[in-house]
Image (tube, rainbow, N blue to C red; front, side):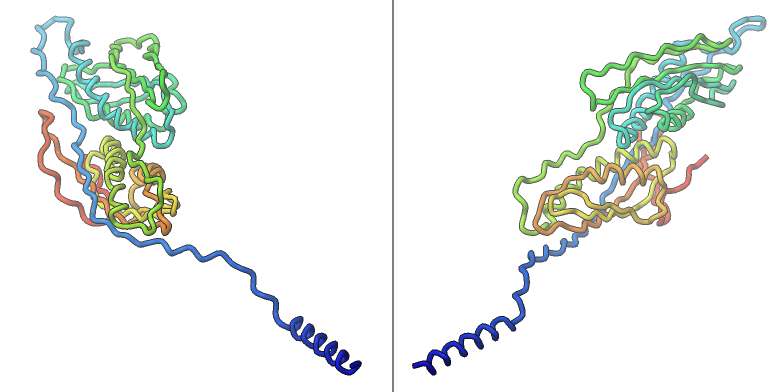
Length: 329
């Protein structure tokens, strides 16, 4: 009896020793998320008319010898031409709001108009609102495209712009108080307050994630890409009237539908357009999925040459590959 118990004890001890010598079980790990789906879309084409000055009124008849009217620019002649600048300036402002959605304030400009009616020089006067300082060059570029009737003598004209972001409801920006005029300066009032809503994506993402990101789900973002590119391109044409070209967006989309990373190729694509597209592109929304996606999207920018009457001609020929065409002087 004693020997049987002893044998049982020895067996139990050996079993315990054998179990204790086994390696510990491996800890459980979370399953590896699926790799994002690579999706390539067809080219998105964006065309936009050039910003041109309306045809100026005819040159007034030369004054009689001895008349004091020589070289005088009237308010009736100058104001319609300067007010026509509000549209390209609005394009400048909308693209600028990509970087500062609530920026607003005023900019006052001063132009020296030559005897032939072209603007020889333009600058800002006073102290522009600090939040609009970067946009000033685009505003000045828009004014340089205006043409006045030749008066036979130089003129000095000032013109203000007032900006309000649609991001802020109820905000009002009064027209700036102009400083006392310089000798010979004509101050032209701007009857419009330039109000713009910042660009925002229109797509409302689905509430339930798809099992796999598909081409059809990505296609839903294309209209937002078109409006995004048009917003940036319209402002680019103000400072670079001959700008056009091709680039490719490569967007890393998280499973949530948010943009994780956005790159533009070629890498040397001009910075004003590039910076605007990258800044706005990070705001794109995709439909959520369990996989996410790497989306490749080529974009083509083509300007439409407008004639003097404000109509548009056929798109200009395509530039050589590799960025925007240079400005034609």
